[in-house]
Amino acid sequence: MTIQWWQLLLLTLYAGIAFYDGNNTTFGTVKPVMAGFFAGLIMGDIKTGLMVGGTLNLMVLGVGNFGGASIPDYMTGALLGTVFAIQSGETELGITLAIPIGLLMIQLDILQRFSNTFFQHRAEKLVAAGEIDKAARMNLLGLIPQSLSRMLPVFLALVFGSNFVQAVIDILPMWLMNGLKVAGGILPALGIAILLRYLPVAKNITFLIVGFVLSAYLNIPVLGIALIGLAVALYSFQNAKDDQVAVATPSGNNVGGEMGD
Image (cartoon, rainbow, N blue to C red; front, side, top):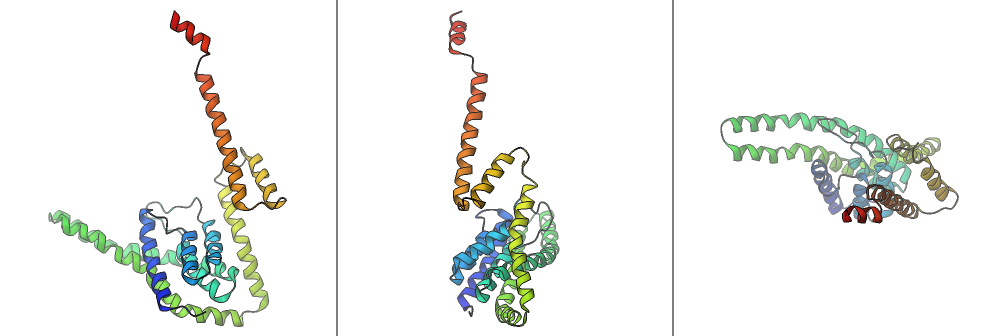
């Protein structure tokens, strides 16, 4: 499948906009599942996009780049991984390629942060000189290295990547292909395991077992299990709220007697 010029343009623009949005958390376009959905929509295979993006989204649950910290950019990984998965017809391969892409983008993230210091120092000098409007303009110019750090690699990967990926697939031995598929299948479980480390599992082990039984033995879809979990959570919350009200509020007779007295 050959990528068209308009697909190349939209995917490249999305990479720049999503990275900016990630620093402002406005629309959530930086989430891997959103990047996978958009790439799948543009490439004509939303299902594959959601599979790639959803899998990578499990890897970033509970992870945040506070302060100056840099984390793997699985948004870019999901964007390119979806394209490669659709072009190659191997979803697992697209997911597996997305992992090193996300890790590689850490280096570019550090580079763009370093280059941004030029605009920061320039803004400080303008503020000292009393030129506030020009100093504010430096913030806008600082978006250039941020956007280019994502747009440029995405553009180059989309231009040269499709033929390269196809050539790699043609020469890869079957044992390695099977290994990539296994690795792609393990990633969701790894993401869930990481998430469980941050959740009060010991306190809510009952619900974890119920969810596992519903999925493994009754084959209920994830959405159905999520709705059941939501219903149980709302019921538990309402009961706890009613208990608190009952403890805090005296009985009706006592209230009346106190008022009469």
